[in-house]
Image (tube, rainbow, N blue to C red; front, side, top):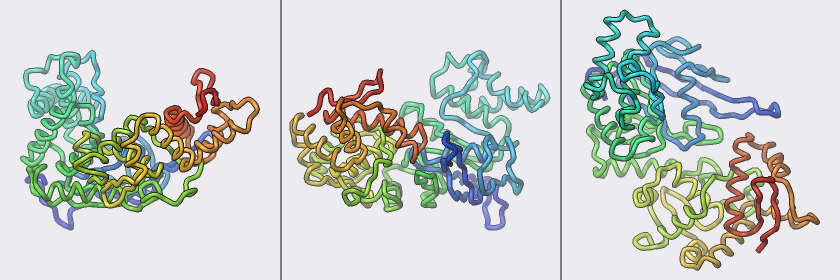
Length: 440
């Protein structure tokens, strides 16, 4: 917590989001609900983390808070007043560096102050102070092309801080950086925050990295998907600086994995009974190589069929956007169970890990047709047609009755990848045709 800011129950919130809801109109006139009943309060001295997988509406919520988008329902209040447009006192750091390549470091940082019509001498003083603060003193005349990724992101921080915002919004600001650079930048940011050297009162950090959330945040809001909603509000009481090897740190990481794999919906529960999924089930884009690799890793010692998800994530250097879809796909295919932050292989999952390539394909084909109704539906249509062929649009139209066109397209591409591996039907991307050209 920022040492220069004292929190108490009577402190006015910097931000209050009440029952926020965001939906978009689909092409067919229906409604696509992205955020539902989101409640969030940020008080002075807090770093609040929004943790969840891609598609859980975290970035959409940031846009509502920044005034770049309007909620479909509920309210967003900043310092007690409704946010009706871009709010003075709220700045954002983006995942991409988003610098103007034709401007120098100094000019990129000063740009916001110029837009605010600040006096020239004040612009120079504040811009140079911000550049010095984030550790780029001496690079004022450099262009973005001359900087490393970490340096460019530091410029992004300086540009956001130079306007002296009350709230800093950070949309996965470290995800585009390599591991060492990201760790250095996180550590430097926390040092400046803890020392009270940054002109901000509160931070909202969007991330899908659980360890990053535990390292940086005072509170972590865990988001579920379809639609995005907060399912857990976890307070982090570990003193700073936080050591990843501290048992308390590891325990909180484990708790969050348990929260994110708890029974809060069909996609994160233990395997549902056969037939409980429909053709409208959203399928994640996970390659068969990732699925096979995860099965092999869990099957081998020291896990021998059951593993702690945080350990697997560390072993394979996977973040939740990579690990969770793969684990849940294995669960859907009845190769594994997920519960309490653990993944346990079922007998056929162990058999897959031990099998040769051809036997793996046969096992995968059998499970794909048995437990993924969309796969069985496409295969049945192809079997019944005299030409044994059908356009992908015939199935996309069905999916779009239940999901957005973009999600339907992703679901279809996931199915195509799995079906090719299993050799249950073929797909020609140029003609958009499914066929039994190479049936098993």
